[in-house]
Length: 216
Length: 363
Image 1 (cartoon, each protein chain N blue to C red):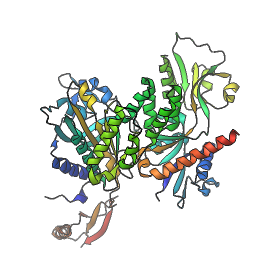
Image 2 (image 1 turned 180 degrees about the horizontal axis):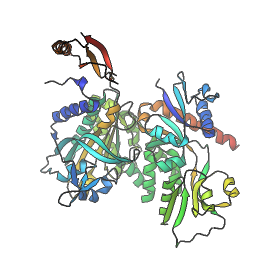
Image 3 (image 1 turned 60 degrees about the vertical axis):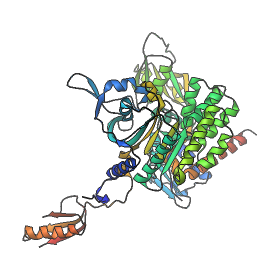
């Protein structure tokens, strides 16, 4: 059996994803042990996992270093990697939103200044509305930007809305619902078709069973 | 002089083999200039893989471009007529902006184009040459995926999908993204029956005999049926080489460019398709020419990393000349080793970073 290379996003989401994949028949128990190792292999089950930065998963998969991986819809929408998007794992649910200070009143006669980590998503959202915007690309703590007058609004990921609230911002529009997706390299998919589709089917079945349990 | 294969790089070896192969099928070599008038690309922007084109001003003030594409130049000059086909092959560098590497890249391509009144024979011959090209550059484990745009567009037509719905569905089908297909169908009110067929087509993959007959039973209209029939006929003409063929109807992401048959070739260990092509009648129509065209390109730069057996050594023998060794002696010894087929480098000391299989001394 060929080894299936799986890129996992480092962090809480990655651990949840691993548990799902392990349940689906690809366990690798050493992965959850405390250690600084990044690569874990279970030759018997034909799988190798590695931890990478969540925003890098799509790059590993697109360039074939990983056959499959798990990335948020936000990353896929922003970087548009040339990969197959095989399954919605329903994990890590959140939303891509527009948020603004409670006092902010939008006016169409001015260019809207938008601070974001996701310039492509922001640009395509506003260009569909024919809105002229000025993108300010930041890499973290986006909520600060409108408070200090750097931008009018922000486009960012919102999970519960607590961070927005604590910083005096409010949600204005939802651009896109987000969840973790199982992606595959387009060439790797051809040569490891059975392994990948089987894993996908088992994951989908597990998700379905979960949904059935939730709705008695 | 016969050049031993081991002294060739993967890309060079591939060029020679492909040239030999295409020559055998009567394709003629097409040599073109590195530059092309920018105007050509402005008129045909939608047929280019990227909208960024490197340009410069020629001595007479004309705006020129470094070719981002070969097919456009060939089609522009195509003169097929009277029922005869124009069959050409090329081996050229193209210049494209690469989304990953933030700049222009030089990409070595080989490929062929068949232009004129395209019939089943012409398409099957191109598909056959695609398989043989993959075998020539990669060996027996190659895979040629075939698709036909008519199958998907026929189904979308029958489902009554509007233009924006079609665009969204084509993207989702290209991603094999069943949840997205379901969501888009829901959003645009496409009947469940068609939603199921669209999902099935997106996920479907397998040998022609396994995949095509059951699909013909669910053909929704004539466009779809004709597409499936064409695929069946092409695969039927490939003979034993059809074992390398896999039907994957999700390959529709180039729907603007292609108009029927789509080919994509893979080699194990390479992260993306090494061969890509298909039927592109739209481009001829846009250039005001009659007839159709079919062809493909092989991306030779991908082969750089293709794992042919790596020697891991720069030279077979490093011959070290001692301080008292005569030049004549060193030369004679080196030539004797070369006559045995070994590569030999003569030095006074071991050069930094050089890897030799064996080090000998001449005293």
